[in-house]
Length: 362
Ligand code: TRP
Image (cartoon, rainbow, N blue to C red; front, side, top):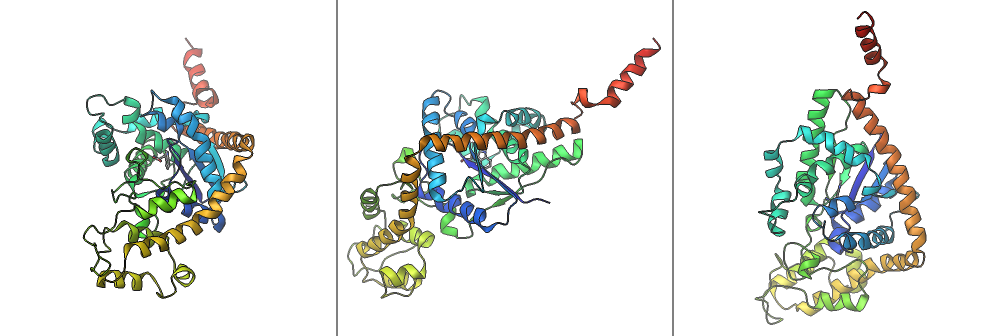
């Protein structure tokens, strides 16, 4: 069986370092591992519109931002197909058929949908399109016969929903769809990188993000303002590393080589943490180290972004060609789905002949 990746992001803003460690970095690795036969990376504009129906301009403007961030991180259009969801109308058609396989109460139980409804104050007025986006996401995944979906932890309920739809579809209509596996980062700190204020989620509206395209000086300032241990007042005080954002970021980003390069008095992060816990290590020193680590990690990403920014027309061309390629693949799956559901009337000679027969002796 072919190994196929499908994943994507909503274009509602520039991507941040949470997206990067949560999924993007892993995608680039998977891409370059050569272990996959096909890789599809989708800019989920149609999904973004499910809760931004009144703000299409925001979605439209951010398509290029997300594409630039993708390319900057090292997604390579020669190896990965980058495309825009709305340009593959087959996805919508698939979703319409899958809707018959999912109950309202099942959608109501989806934890991601639940928390998003709360976050957006949708309680009394949930748009139907928003409510059903897990079904549309199942279409995205199954249309490409994806075996592997590298995403952040928050997408787990979407994958569960997709698997249920696949099983139900296959049991009713015969084996047609592929059950996908979620692929999460193995580093726990990468699962959900907190915002610089220590809040659980990095989000544009909370203003606590470090963007991939962040200017170096801006990033330094953000790191120096990061939430640490509120009880670690004097350098000599013992400090806490759990729930300390700076250490969570180090967990996600730093390697032993970084210590050799920037902080050779420690062999590794364990030693640094031990010193902090004991007391005698100030926040500023740890923050400066994190800054060196992050600047090194993001520098090549910024540089590549600048190159692509010089040729925006080319970036649109990449998306256009990617969307055409994605559409061909999704159309093939849709044909198979319709055949399995027996709604391929004009290709079904058996049906047509049987009807001819039925009426021939009348
Ligand atoms: N829900 C994802 C996000 O919020 C975007 C997305 C849409 C997606 N369809 C997908 C991710 C299919 C993985 C697979 O960013």
